[in-house]
Each structure stands twice: as C-alpha cells, then as structure tokens.
Amino acid sequence: MRWTIRQALIPGAAMLLAGCGMVDGRGDNRLPGPPRRNAARPVADYPVKIGQPYQVNGITYTPADVPGHDEVGYASWYGGDHEGKPTANGENFRSEGISAAHKTLPLPSYVEVTSLETGRTILVRVNDRGPFVNGRVIDLSSGAARQLGMRRNGIAPVRVRRVNPHEQERAALRAGRQAVERLAAPEPLLAALRQRLGGPQRPAAPVQLASAAPDAGVTYAVPLSSEPSAARGAYVVQAGAFASRERADGLAAQIGGWVAHSNGLWRVRYGPYSSEAAARHGVEKAVAKGYSNARIMTNDVR
Image (cartoon, rainbow, N blue to C red; front, side, top):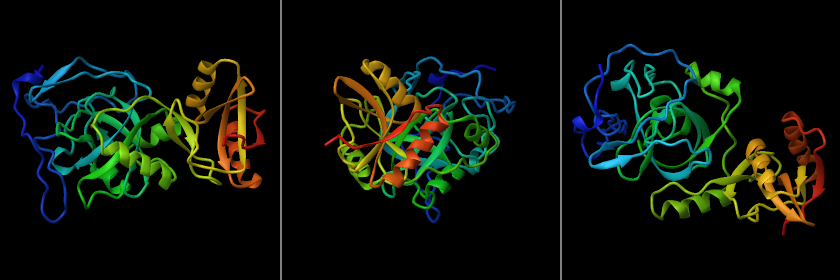
C-alpha cells in the first residue's frame, strides 16, 4: 500500500510530557500518511535510500546525500509509542536502539551527536524521518537520548555531524547496541558551536577535521578555511604532505585530521599535543589507518 505525504496533517508543535520530560512524537516527527504495514525489511546499510522531495505543513524538504553535513539545533526524542512500527527506512523501530530521525539525510546514515551543554558525543544511526518542528534538527530514539544524557530533559541543544564509521561500530548500531562513545568535545569547540546555535537554524558549510583535545588524539571539526588556532600544543603528528590542497583536504576528511599550509605544501596532521608522549597517540592513529610514515613534529601553526 502506497501513501502520500501531502495527504495527512500533523500537529505543529511537540508536547513535553510531565514527569519524564519525553517529547511526544505521535504527531510531530513521523512522516504523515496512512499507517504503514508492519512488514519490516532486514536491518542493513544497503541499499541506501535518499528519496524524493516531500512536503509537511507547507514546508518542502529535499533529501540529499551531503557527506559534509554539519548542523546545530535542538534534539528531541521518541520511544514507546513507536515500538515495533516501521521507520521511514522500512525497519522496525526499536526504542532502546541507538537510532534517530532526520528530515533530509540518506537512510541509513551515521552521525555524531554532541550535546552542546556537556560535550558528550555519541554515534547514532539515522533510519527515520523527522522531527517536523522548527529548530529541531534530530529526533533521537529513547536509547540514544539516554546515552547522550538528555532523556530526562526531553530537548537539548546539539551538533549533528555526518560521519563514516568503521564496520564494527555500524554492526553494533544495526544490532541495537551502543557504539563506543566518543571523547567529549572540548570547551573551545562547544563555545563556537553555541554561537552558531544562536544564529539561523540551517545546516552549516562542510568542515574538515581538526584535533581538539590535547593528549587524547581525538578530533573535532573547524571550517575548511581555518586551522586549529583554538587548541594549542607543542607537537603535532603529520600523516602526509601534498602540493594539492584538494588532495590534502580529501585525506584529512578520510582519516580525521586537519590541514596546515607551510613551505608551499598542504600538510595533513593530527594534534596538537602538549607533550611528545601524548603525540604518540596520533602516530598510532595514523598507522592504524595505513599511514606508516606518520611522524611527530613541532607545532608550527601559530
């Protein structure tokens, strides 16, 4: 049975339930139309669905495959009322799984969701459409909201950034389990993201990755035209150097590094780190991704 998005009405705003703080998703975040039959497809990452433009409450949404998708806004969550019902991807919804609804990302997609209040960052699998409420950019499953630490409050400011995790993490989320939680985003990054939240609620430009937490060897994103001036350290790890900015940007996006320009070359790096010992984390990370010639250097980005 086929259904048409334009045929149904949905409430214009979500309701916050007293006591638990849950955002009621019965009308604010599901694709409208007649009920779908409960004949779910197997949980798999392929084929990926993008879909045609659709309209809800007079607003047209155009799904698109944007690898650098990066936005800030507010997250809500939905749970028990949808348990076992087909998602927009055709899979059965599992409220305690680590999944989410998004208006335009391909189904499925994987995103890192960062709480702008705590910096806590989790990996989530997007397999549904919504939420159709102004200012809300993602609707988390009950399990994902619990992992992020926002289930009690119901709504939280977040950053949503599309990523390409390795198969072990994908398999965990497909099975309804949590992937290994990312290290918390540092305060300089959170401050910048909160400033973005205060502006127009729209997806930001694509980003390249840059290390945020000295001594940790983890990464965060900064605009492509920037270098990581917010995080300082004496050492960096260089994975490669290129005459082409395009090639350097491509590698940085692939391995989770950042790009610096010096002596006529575009250099892909991790860091910075406060000590040489800490920088060895970056070397290990680069070697694990196949870049055995990675080396520790002094930080010349000032």
